[in-house]
Length: 504
Ligand code: HEC
Ligand code: HEC
Ligand code: HEC
Ligand code: HEC
Ligand code: HEC
Ligand code: HEC
Image 1 (cartoon, protein in one colour):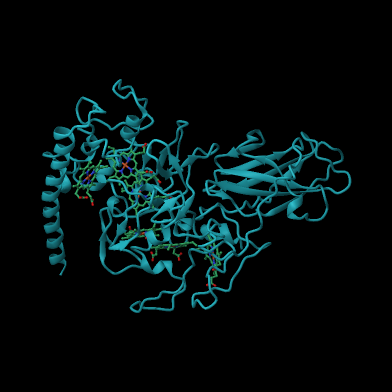
Image 2 (cartoon, rainbow, N blue to C red):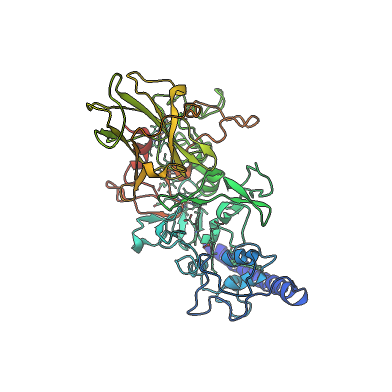
């Protein structure tokens, strides 16, 4: 049975090889010889990625005098798309007569091919080491993590190895980079495949501003292509990339781990059909299900003041901020008054490209010095999918004020001097020295209500929700589970991902 499967696979490979040769050659002939595009002369010189050479990184200065317009710079930077105008890009990966493996690939395996650039040599994404080369010249963690166990990754999706996906069918899967990514580009975020394991995931429609199909993140119109491209930005403090996850990720992961998307397994052939799982697609307030007749309905809810706050990435806007207990005041450096009512109240929200979080936790800080010279230091952990933060203040007043009494006093996008960031602890400090009075026309957003997803009115559509990527990295993790020694691609050590939300 396994032999048969192998034969079948190889038979397909041979077929692929022939088809690929014909298609690639005719593509090449069509574009380069017969109907060469007059508007652009491809760079002269030897093809990239021959032995000892490296591909350009998009951050490299473009010194080629032939590259005198920005369109060409774009084409050079990303070999995965814009083929219509840049057929030369095929040669980064394919060699018509000297391919080392099926599909005329330049390297012996698909992994080697991808790593010929994504190991730090040919792209700002080093997926081997899980690194991102930021525009500031710093090297920070990449979003998906890395694959190289000798770089400290304790568990990874195992590439080019036969394995059974937990929670999936019992078939062996030979996981390759192209199981999840399409090297020729798709409409989806990160060129994620449009079909995996026979399951259609969909293709994000980049022509529509509000398209919610396929695997998508917040996007913006690219004036050059007139298409909506993922709006990926760098956080000005961490230099890490920030992506506002829009949707499709749970579906994506469950193409191989099909059971894990259900709170209850719905199939018939599992050993224990009564297994419960942590829900995904759930708002941070819980009570995820939209109807009470849904058998998977969960009665739990975490409404204010028991709302859950997390630093983990959510689908939608980030979670609100939960300031750390070590937030305090100092009796110098500011003008905060202590006469009369002596408590200052703060709300910090997280902002990404989809919008602002729900109302953050209300933190009260008693200022008990003798004179009006006080400063409040709010310390809070970095939220991985927040691009910026806003701080609102109310008071001084002894009792907890209502939302409309809060006014904006700082935002990382405007008053950066009040914010500092500690990259080791991954913590921010906001200093309120009293110099900015609250702008009471700018109130914090409403508290995180249980807004059932209403697809027509789109209410709650961008509210923060749990997804597979909340707890797991996609490629690999450096975390470690002290009891089992395993790490299962989890974003934090042991049960750290659970504590990050539930704070038991
Ligand atoms: C970034 C690397 C890369 C670039 C650039 C690239 N390819 Fe590919 N191509 C691959 C890989 C990897 C495969 C094998 C696909 C798989 O693993 O499923 C492949 C497969 C193919 C196939 C056979 C399977 C299929 O999808 O039809 C054809 C034909 C092909 N490529 C043509 C092209 C042409 C033409 C270009 C340029 C317009 C191009 N490729 C550019 C990496 C690349
Ligand atoms: C010739 C070099 C090269 C090869 C080979 C290559 N890539 Fe890339 N890749 C790039 C560059 C350049 C970018 C654009 C980002 C940047 O500026 O570094 C990129 C971007 C990506 C992205 C992010 C896309 C996005 O829009 O955010 C993914 C995912 C990716 N590559 C996967 C792969 C996979 C999988 C393979 C192997 C099939 C592969 N790459 C092979 C150079 C390469
Ligand atoms: C199990 C599916 C899966 C496999 C296998 C996979 N990737 Fe990815 N990859 C993803 C997802 C999902 C993301 C986006 C992660 C995020 O935004 O958190 C991603 C992101 C990336 C990026 C963008 C940088 C980053 O860290 O976000 C690159 C480049 C990339 N992958 C290359 C590769 C290469 C090279 C391989 C093979 C060695 C590979 N991927 C294998 C799912 C996969
Ligand atoms: C193309 C199929 C495929 C997709 C898509 C996929 N996985 Fe996997 N996954 C596997 C296979 C096969 C294994 C078992 C072998 C291994 O660890 O790589 C696995 C293992 C895992 C493990 C266990 C790792 C360990 O240390 O034992 C986790 C956790 C996981 N996947 C999470 C995810 C998440 C999260 C996503 C979505 C970002 C995802 N997977 C998408 C195929 C897939
Ligand atoms: C709330 C956090 C959380 C979310 C959300 C989550 N996981 Fe997990 N996952 C875990 C933890 C924790 C483990 C480790 C196993 C354990 O301790 O029970 C794990 C383990 C796994 C494993 C390995 C199981 C094994 O037997 O080796 C896979 C595969 C997996 N998750 C896939 C997924 C997929 C797919 C999704 C989205 C549908 C998802 N997870 C969502 C926390 C989460
Ligand atoms: C991103 C925030 C978040 C993370 C991380 C998280 N949870 Fe939850 N958890 C929730 C929410 C929200 C609910 C309520 C779900 C609902 O009502 O639909 C919930 C529900 C639960 C429940 C009740 C489920 C039931 O069947 O009654 C338990 C138990 C639980 N979580 C444990 C965990 C554990 C263990 C982890 C770590 C693997 C974890 N949670 C990680 C947000 C989170």
